[in-house]
Length: 568
Image 1 (cartoon, one colour):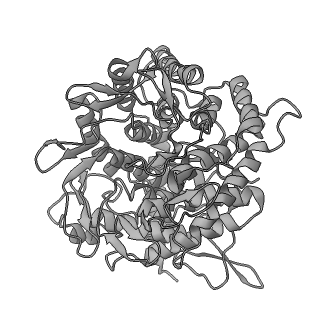
Image 2: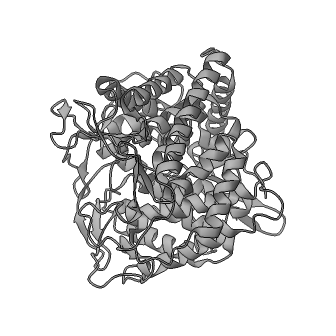
Image 3: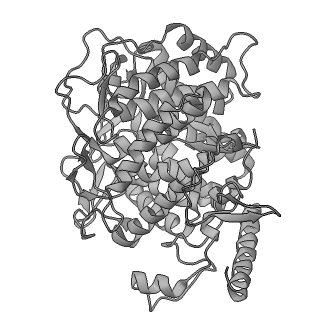
């Protein structure tokens, strides 16, 4: 039992957090309403320019080639850099339509949403001889179907009576069942590749990435909740637990591993490609499902990242065994990190990193795939920009948390850059070389599922009014429901249980069930922080502890959402 002094300190800290929250809730002078409407409509036009060109020139194939106004059946190509074992008779899975459904609802176009849902219900099949990347197919197709099913049954966007009978959920269940053979390994870690018709192919590669086998829990967990079939979540959770057991004593993980032996292949990692969504899904799974196990994993991982990867506002890569820096580089996928930091309330660190990413964007006009921090120059071969949305995503989260109008200005810059450099007559094209702005003939589906969605929400967040969602790594919204929060086995007693006693027994409740942000359960320890990170000479400039430590709280969308969990 904490002493009286500790309890008083906790109460004082809670009062401070509440004051900060009220300050952030206050309106902030920024862009006028007319300008916000103008920018919102500009994003709407971007979305429909991309969407309508896809529907005219590429549908029902997977993605649009905007320069030649043709198509690519790219589902089997995602993550398949060498383009091996491409199917002979695969005619697409309407990937971009699946990815666009939730964005149509965000934009308020229920008519087109209904049309897309009904077409997929009547025509989409996964009984095809196509070898697909499990991770990509999970976040894009399974996530898109699950989210669209939930939106189709929501009172705001309910389809015409009698037309929708859970067809998208049936498709999602069928796809999830086709994923399950990938998990049949000695370790429980899934193969990176699965043939939708025949399962794991003979002589399939056993190499996968940390994100590839550790970023499946949101979609597959939601599928289990919706269908009542526990196999999907069980498979994803077993893989996640195995992956976590492979961490180093520093609580770091590598980038690639062998799913059969359970041995690491690449020991260097960071917060970018190959690892990024692993961290993202630990925190978001905690928010969505209320299992403290996810929080414990995330908390340990985050502290390790801040200690071993962070260098000022930047994040380099390091060896998981020693913590020593390996590669000093910025990758465009790292730009999601400030958004994740906002969810946990680490606003100062999020703002610091976001400004550096935006500096690079502003310098080149878009965000290059790889930038060498130690040389201050582009990577010689990875100078492309495939319309990645991560900077826009983080900009949206930062504005939601702070209401600082500067982030709207960042959004306006991103919108203007995309229209100036990447918009063509047939859609939006990727950039092959940011130094010349030579274009590449590919409009990725995530441009519609993420980029346009986050930019639209930046200027009009009415979709979120009265709702609490977790956005998957592909931008698909999943509702936070109290009924999805599971009870853990009695044998599992995590460190941050809150005890509630009555006359007969002590009932153990998770922090999320109690609607208590775990970040607030421990008071600030600035002295420990300074000693840990070598900042003994630094003056404390903010009322909250410096943002490298999650043991303290600041105003966060995460803490906001757990106080408003919908009981359904």
